[in-house]
Length: 481
Image (cartoon, rainbow, N blue to C red):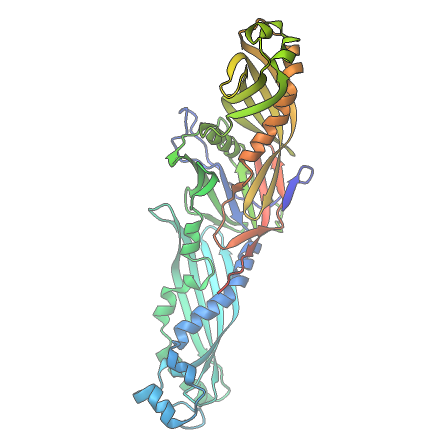
């Protein structure tokens, strides 16, 4: 888990993720980013590394065409082989090269090993995939001879009409060469490879040799729950930008309450990330604008998540000692209850090393149970410090401390009550219970943009003025068979 770094300043390489927001409409009706991220060259190297075993399995399947009968190749009895392969049974090895004239592809390629897989950025263009594969070729019962398959493909990511990202191949250049010191063997092996390796088929599915095919990219836009009635969804605004710093992607967050989209207010300040100049040691840097957090709390407000009941130690008898009119309204002794709701939308403020949540509450004070009758209404303006951290792929948001709180009289059935007396009577329960309520609402955290099989490690959270950076490393989650 990464705790908020209030003193450090992460300076990862970031392309500009922002775009101007529309300022004329009262709610957001245009497509504008409020968050995003950049996959660094180190992140690409990690993806290449973990893709090697996957690519080897995929190539082995394509090139060796494994079938059930191949499991019995350990038998050397000719009648057994003929029963398994029928008319495809090869003649005994001919010549020193051991290659029979009737061999098929599954008989000739006996081993596949990926020795190198690299992903290289081509700035302002695309991504280059390079794979080096060692092959063993031989007919049945013969000694395999080595060969080398090289695949170089140019890949790019497009935004499909369904709003999902797609990994596409724009160019593919496979080459096959035999590795032999004898001219006859090399020529014969090369002839077999040219005939048997389906170059077109390899190029058609070359992007699937990586561990983040289109199925993984689709998971990026999956809706994530925030509360039982509230969801968020990260939507790519355009195809990512390729540069020497990495692959940058801008996202717009869509919020829903009970399945209906919430039109969040437009940010008065355009969101754009600075392009920094130092090298990042992280695989990925996520970025979230101040507007992202404000929109989150705005949506929770619309969902009624901040309508809260605040218990009090006061009763009508004890309160009447401070406000005599209460005794006239309630001759019997009844418990005092406080109910609070937001009277206007909450706002998150991000400053260097600090995050704060501003709440504008209406607190109604009443007596009786279960039907509470309000006799006093108070406006409470509360500023709470926020702590940000990351667990797995979720951002945890907790209320650290109440930094400032002011109470003022809004309406009264018991006469004029001075602000100082309101604070004496009701400030403590408000300051104690409001943070606890807010933390309970977001106890499950907020899902970060991520692919379904990856989690985040070595995370830090760095708060800047108007935005938050989350440098982190990728980790492929283990799966069971």
